[in-house]
Length: 541
Image 1 (spheres, rainbow, N blue to C red):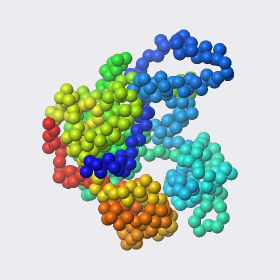
Image 2 (image 1 turned 30 degrees about the horizontal axis):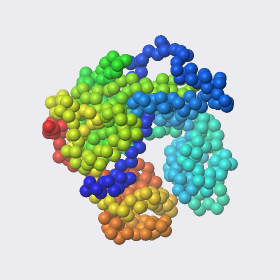
Image 3 (image 1 turned 180 degrees about the vertical axis):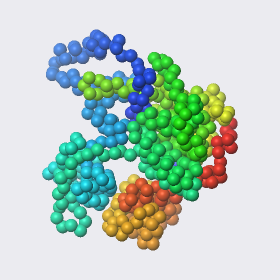
């Protein structure tokens, strides 16, 4: 079993941790470092060398370029999350944290060197002028973008822009002979951090949070209210692959579950006095049973939420050990529009745990640590996790929890290796299932658009034997059918195809209810909710 995990690393885990995972500026007002005494112009060795180079070097040099390249090298001597953000990247950073940007309001995918519209944001700029799902964008402001090997970032650069500015796009639409031209006025486009909220059974709701931005708390509360209106007495909060973000949203969310003065976290650093964050009297979700899903890519602010709920015995944590990012960054603006994101403190869960994993062996080793966990069998066997006795802590009720790197779940769910084959790996690595889903949705959009939920779409696809069409499509793309591999992976292949097709038609409300069928961690959580297993019934030694 362990060897199977090692063979199919690309399918089991995608290590996508960005070096800039951070908690935002939420702590800034309460834990401000004083920089007033630091004179940026004070002579120093680096400044002296740069001056000597500028004044005496044999050739002309661009000192600004040298500085831009040197700063990241200096910061490599610190922790992995202290980073320099060039001025050219600041707009993207602000958009991610604020939860919106200015653009035309489409989700697109580049397939076969063509920009294909997957989803048009309802009531957005493109929607209002008549763009449709399935349209192909071939020109932007007279620049041809089809058949020129354009990249995602290049398309984004062309489509995004100042609110109120205009952009002209040329569209090819199925069933229309000539190219259609649209003038679109860019507007604010929300970046949603809650993917979906829906009922998994009569009494349990599921809500998926992908990041923490300024808007996340409001999105979360809207989702929870929707679930409660549908009869939810318990909720499953999915934080898997959520790398963190804005701390304020997390504090407000946890506050809805805890009693007055229960601790949420505290922070402490060499230059930072201890600062404690406690719950207020909100506790509006006191009656809900809570189950939180985590995995090895759950990091930072997500770990704060999981740790606070675990230490206060307020929710069961289900899945695999989280990433282990427990450092607090403050973003300090610089005069040229760039910024330094400086680590100023560690955060600690209510029981006193620092869940920051070691980083003394350098940044490369720090991010490779997830692979080390896998090689040591941690994704398969919880007993592979070794924790020193000195890192044991107790929750409010006296349960044992652990520090030293990440949140260890109350209920461990191993990585699912069933159904994995070389055939599935070939389909996955070449993006065949995803491409087929768009192709099929595009060619059956009129029939599929009559359906409003995942069950209806899935029933239609089952009746029309979607698997055979997928296998034929794959053969046409140079991936012949492997009968033994298909036998082993049929459930995964078929379920993924149906889920992606449903996403192309009705968005995440179509995708998640279908993909649930092969999501062992979610299925385990649903089983636990049916057993009415609560925190007080879980004992850990």
